Image (cartoon, rainbow, N blue to C red):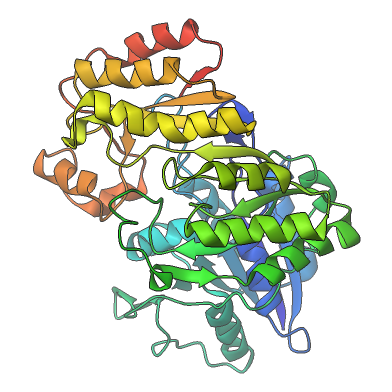
Length: 432
């Protein structure tokens, strides 16, 4: 059976300023789970397409797929000042496919998994898959091949029945035991695309680690922790097969658990691969030894997001919080590890005092780039979403398939021009 896989992400900038064209690593895992003896697989990545709809049409006409899997990476770019909604692109792709094919269309990906039923309603595919869907998608393709489309017994599958959209209980799960299939991607272009080729290290149950979410963390809090020797072997293969030495370790909190991070760095040092890599670092739970190991292992840049427990959460005085927030940036500076850092302005409880506190914090550090985010991009199931409901900003969470932002009422009327003025005076500050 012919299976076409489509990556619809076309957002190629990080915080409007940094070139970042992330390779669709999730779709590469999906491709790797399909049985090559049963299915002929073709991957089309729209990141570099000049006319993406024309490219979709040409590919569908030429390949004549029986099934199409579509990966939805983001709901939006999460920018208040330059908002871009991602779903219309995917809907246009589906409409163009349907003009030229009767293939079964299956949609999944990280963004789809946030609001599966709502995304299904908007996109109108034949099936949806919520969660880590490698094995589940392969099973769906096997069933389609033999004419058994119903998927009522598979966790995380979304479908329409009797006019209602149904999401099967649970989520699709994957062990990520199969290496991603990269041969179909434009690896030459990704060699120079931003932060490097994605290599999965681990996936947590959290979006980004915070002091509260990691206080009693155990291995059970991770959906996947890949063995270190497998990660190192994959990095080695990237060089041997594609001459790629620039890697992005896919990990929302590289320094959790701390021992795992140190062991991975030590293994990279021992392997002496000459790799340069980047990753996301939580701005707490760190020590000088890890910074040294990361630098010696080839880490070129870490991305630090908002520290959990910013000034308006009531935990300690502003001075005490400042000292805690400065610790990891100062460790990076002392250890020679470059970093970027983000701060969100307008969170619940924000006041002029807390705004000035954050700006003072940014003036006391020396990042490669500081990203000043205006407003909170509201995600379903979060405390901010609950607050938005209480305050009448949204009437239900289904609305969150479209970009929606929360800005605290105490700063709402003046925060944007004020931050624009501050950023204009600081060349390493980027307002987003």
